[in-house]
Image 1 (cartoon, rainbow, N blue to C red):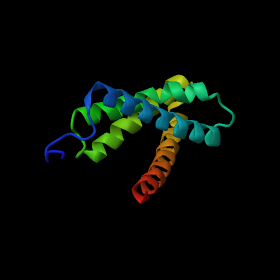
Image 2 (tube, rainbow, N blue to C red):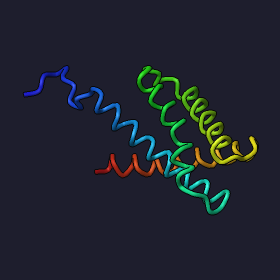
Image 3 (cartoon, helix red, strand yellow):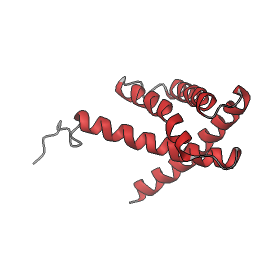
Length: 121
């Protein structure tokens, strides 16, 4: 029998690393989809590189227990992805901002779809 206060997930360093890798993969896929839709044919390596920034910001918010500040989380994540797009894709700030907003929309749509599928199972 499992005690009432037991941590069923295990936690620890392995959980942090796996969560980071899954977030990085998710942001890379959605950024590549958005960049392909917005810019055209682009290498997927750029999306993987630029996706490191929002993945790190997401993990810092998770580790810092700032989950209640969802607006702050969204603002910092969006700012980090726009800055990363500007640097990695070598585009102007306006283009990076528009691509960042499109990436945010793709991530929201795919995230909600995956959430609904997982909760349905």
